[in-house]
Picture 1 (cartoon, one colour):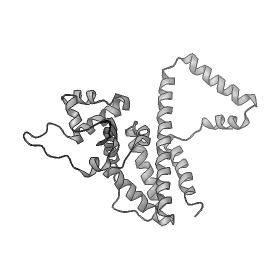
Picture 2 (cartoon, rainbow, N blue to C red; picture 1 turned 120 degrees about the vertical axis):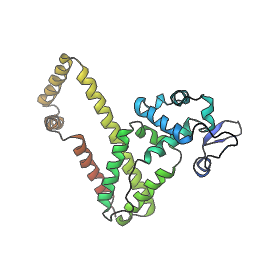
Picture 3 (cartoon, helix red, strand yellow; picture 1 turned 120 degrees about the horizontal axis):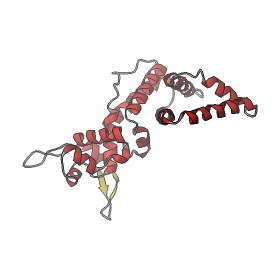
Picture 4 (cartoon, helix red, strand yellow; picture 1 turned 135 degrees about the horizontal axis):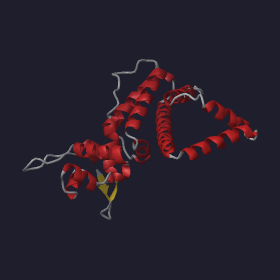
Length: 245
């Protein structure tokens, strides 16, 4: 929930109010809705239409409630975003404890992050705006720190390493989604435009002015699939985490 400043306006998300204080029961009739149900609807809207489509009015229409009544469950859009991020973080299926092979465990965790972010394409953009850590997010963080313990990195370095991993996955997924959208748009383009693009790239490769780029363009014809590219980059990043230890 949000904390209110001297002006009477919300000043941000208060983690104590949001995570430590459960929804209090009310006298009289039981509440018609719940914070969890509202969050689930918000996630469904974001999955289908993007974050900009998530409004209290849109959620109210889906659950058949008055818009203003939802503010008794979720005080503002910032709080709703925190709830959404933490809810999808619950999609992780964490093992009871790390295996001891920190590289393998970290790869598994990164693969899970990628799958969750691809299932919820709005998530990479939402993460930088997060103000607090909910229970599901804390569970993932605790597991990641335990995974990294055998590396010999100190606690702060382990936290930074997991932050780096998450940032890499979010950035890569954003790129994958953008590439997928561009490919779909290209498939809808005219044959003439597609042929012109192909001719242009072949001309660049043949010009001799960009020999390094020509090698890349030549190799693109046999480029590995998205999963293989992700795995290759992930291994490079993981292997570099302990380079200075």
